[in-house]
Length: 215
Image 1 (tube, one colour):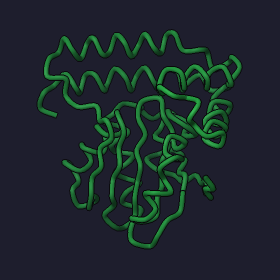
Image 2 (spheres, helix red, strand yellow; image 1 turned 30 degrees about the vertical axis):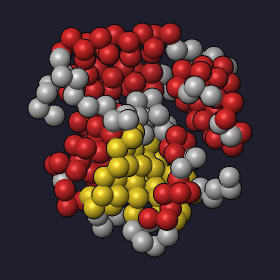
Image 3 (cartoon, helix red, strand yellow; image 1 turned 135 degrees about the vertical axis):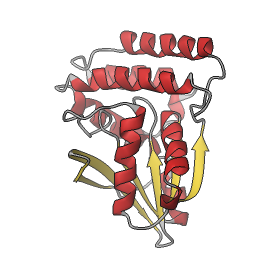
Image 4 (tube, one colour; image 1 turned 180 degrees about the horizontal axis):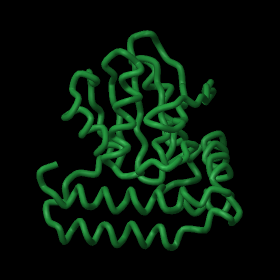
């Protein structure tokens, strides 16, 4: 896999926003939205294929990846507004791709600002739980994962390996390039304690949203 990724920062919603530009065709814009605890690196294995449908970019939402909170809220609702601001800078409706929490955000964006979206792709989206009890159980599991997660001050290699074991069934099939990209993100987070609390705030807000059946 030979990807050429352009990394850039821009001012969005009162703070910086890191965006990974994977390139692609001139057919339009494809924007990928990561899940809880994720980043632009999550899209490396599929961005090349998406490029057939347009230029592929993946923003790191505030509190995740290489985008610091900088005093901004990291809730699902707040990050949806950040995504909306970013999409409007592209000045054309996009194909919006969302995974997990990013799927929820992408779905909300499509419902609330349909003029910014020309296509929607949901990959294992986090959708309403149907029952509050189920949502609360999910919250307990999510917060337990955060609690057991290695501290960011620890060896970032340990953090990356722990994440792969948690999120993949065959980590041995993940390419070295993708592994190294996730390791770089983990290393960049080491000295910023806000990233830990950002995950907690996002998880709580996600469950609060999912427990309401009228998403």
